[in-house]
Length: 303
Image 1 (cartoon, one colour):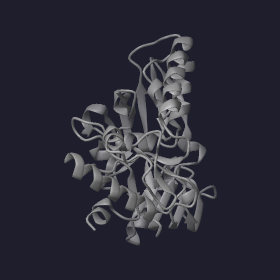
Image 2 (cartoon, one colour):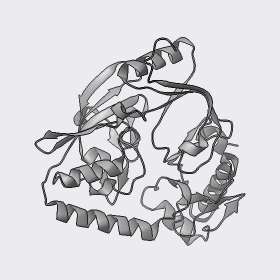
Image 3 (cartoon, helix red, strand yellow):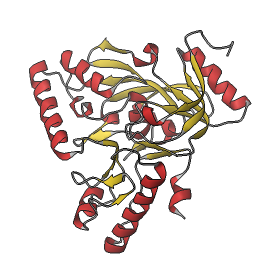
């Protein structure tokens, strides 16, 4: 505690459910909100010395926290230093790890930078989007990345161009093993703010019509090669299947909605049932897209 800045928040047994979009999960044994990069280095060093795992939490989308919580250190980039979004000129933007994707989309529109419109409806932050190459409407985070600053799996600071990363569908190898600090994003084209806002509104309307409004973690499953998870779930009559207060959405089959009071165990059991049904009917094996914190999918899906 004496080694971090006065503005660094440190807590014990901090509840995590209210920090996720699905509103489920236990507590973090240790929880911190570093005020700056120096704080982050101290926290990571402490985790290394005391040999406990660390996990970075952004906006809390695309993840499910175990009912048992996380027996380690959860780091959240909520301080203002981690939310900086600034123009670098020449169609380039610096976006820190805690910056909201929706805000970046609006910032780009205001500056006449096209290509960021797909970010509007993704309820996440830059760090998570870089980690999993978040995508929507046929576009991906790494479509607009020029270079990324991150801490690699060995704890070393790196500032590397896009070409140095192995990125694909829902994963960026190097960042998934480290911690993204921020990125330089770039636009290939300029356009009027009115035209960009028009596309943003169109994407927003499409999302509202096709996605549930209840508490969820976003798409639960990755799309299997040659097909779509939501389409398979719809075809085999799985929409509406439920366990406790967790239900496969009637609006979009690839969403599981928490109707209030659902547990992680409910969601995990529902995931198991959906996978079993789809496999039995089609042969496809659906793999979770949502990150499971405090447990592992390999562990719970092998039961």
